[in-house]
Image 1: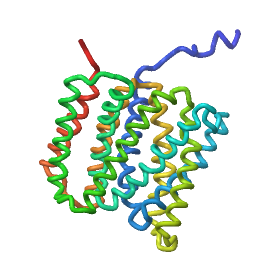
Image 2 (image 1 turned 120 degrees about the vertical axis):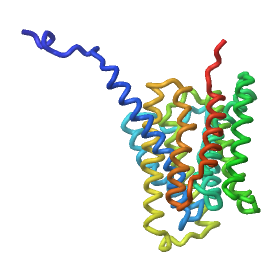
Image 3 (image 1 turned 90 degrees about the vertical axis):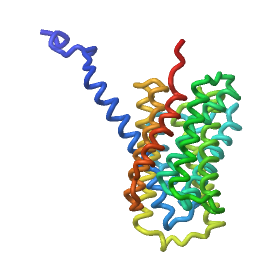
Image 4 (image 1 turned 180 degrees about the horizontal axis):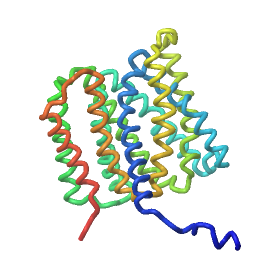
Length: 307
């Protein structure tokens, strides 16, 4: 009897297993990104913001480099995209992650996640400006609802927005805006570039630049860095940056971009709960109500256009 006659047909599928794997991957991404904000908060407890951002990327870079070599992906962007390479390195990795770290020295990790969850809204705005995509009336309503509830959350959190807190909030929002702009420009100019190529060298160069700037301007004392902050940096570099990246792009092959973008609606919930637990604060019913309205408003902006 031939082996072909007794082998299992390669096309046999198990829909329930595929759905379970997809759901598990989606949950992993939500948890990974939801815990990133607490990781940043712990890291900057004893590491200055520039230095922390640089160390995070330098920890992640060897793994990205290994993936690129194993998959034989090019490390360099195409020659005609060298200017785009500089743009990605500066406006996606370098400055935004410093701003996030700086913001978390003045703002709670949960509020940071909520502020950053506005990023898809800015993507919508930049898509209209640069890609000529139309913004629907329902999306305008969703944006208005989202930002109104965000204002109520800031007020509920007791932030009086003094100079330091205002700078922290602005730094996080600018980071979200820069990421949104980079996503849109990437869709316009970098869609042909491999995802691994897109991340590897920019992460390494950004890490080196940020750490060098930190050594010059922050003069960190490495002996004063606590074990807790080192653990947070390792988590951010190995799990949040590399692990979250890999699982996210595995999901891109299984889910539509619209469904996958709901990660940005879900992960702030994890971030708020974990941040409140770590900081020993109570999550009131009013806060949960404003949070639900905020995320609901942003979810409206993602609903597909149906005639």
